[in-house]
Amino acid sequence: MRALISLVLGFWRTLSRPAVHLSFGFLTLGGFLAGVVFWGGFNTALEATNTETFCVSCHEMRDNVFAELKTTVHFSNASGVRASCPDCHVPHEWTHKIARKMQASKEVWGTLFGTINTRDKFVAERLRLAKHEWHRLKSNDSLECRNCHSAESMDFTQQGPRAAEAHQGFLVSGEKTCIDCHKGIAHQLPDMAGVEGW
Amino acid sequence: MKKSVLAVLALLFAVAPLQAQDVPHSIAGLRGEATLGGDTMPPPIARTEDSASRRVRNYPEQPPTIPHEIDGYQVTRNANKCLSCHARARTQESGAPMVSITHFMDRDGQFLAAISPRRYFCNQCHVTQQRIDPAVANGFVDIDSLLAAERDKE
Image (cartoon, rainbow over all chains, first blue to last red; front, side, top):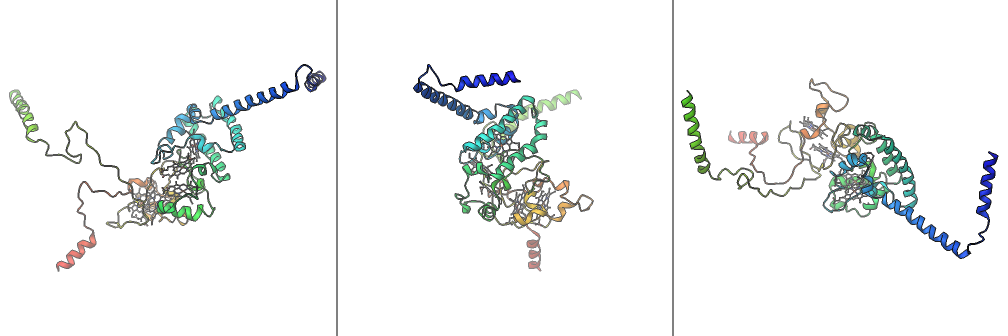
C-alpha cells in the first residue's frame, strides 16, 4: 500500500514539474490540437452512434422495433418526412444527449449478455423498456415529438374533429403531453393492463 | 360403359374451345374490361371518412359504422386502442359513446365485469366508411319506410 502511494506521488511529481525541454508555445498549441482531435473524435463517435443504421445494426432492434416501425406513419406518409430512431429517442440538447448516451452504454452490456436476444425475451422485457421511454417523454414534456410537431403550428381546422377537440382541450392547456395520448405510435404495445389511460 | 365415357370426353374437348369463342368478353366482372391475364387500372384508394357525426343505423341490431379514422390503431392481445376511448371509464375524457351493455354479455346472457372476449376484436363487426360509387347497387329499405308504404296503401 505504502509502495503504491509513493509510486503515485512520484508520478505526480514528474507530471507537475514544469517542462524543461519543450517550449511553452509547443505545449499550448499541442494541447489545443490534441483537444481538437479528441473532441472531434468524441463527437464523431457520438454522431456515428446517433444514426438509425447504427441502431438497427443490432438484430434486437432490427427484428423487433424497426420491423414494427416500418408499418407506421412515421416510416411512410403523405409528406415524405421520416422519423428515425434517434429523432424520437435521443435528445438534441448536448447535456441531455450525453446523459442518454451514458444510459445507452448499459444497453451495450444487454447486447453482449443477450438480455433480449430472442423475440420472446424482448417481448417479456417490453413493458419495462416502454415505461422508461414513457417516463422520459413525460418528464421532458415530449420534447422529441415537439422537435418535429409543435402545438403552436397545429391548424386545428385541418385536423379530424377528435384530434382538434383533444388538442384544444388538453394539449394547449398544458394538462397533458403528447405521450399521454399517443402511446404505441411507432411500435407494438406491451401489455397495457394497469397503464394509465388504457 | 368405357365407350360412352370416351364419347363424353371427346364431346367436351370439341365444345370447350367453341364456348370460349362464343362468349368473348361480355362477362367483365368488377375488375372491368380486361383479359384474364391482363392488368386493370384499380380506382384510387378513397379516403376514410373522419367526421364528428354518428351515422343512422339501418336496423336496431346493426353494429354502428365507425365515423372516424382508425389508421394504426392496435387491437392486440396486449392492448385495445378502441377501448382507450370507448371503455366505460374512459368516456368522460374521450367524449366517445360507451360500448353498449351487450358488449359485456357472454353467450349465455350473463353480464361480465369487463368487455366480453367475443366482443374484444371490434373490427369484426364495426367498420369505417369511404365515399365511393358502390360496385353493386344496394336496394335495402328500412322498416320505417316499409311501414310508411303500407300505411299509404291503406
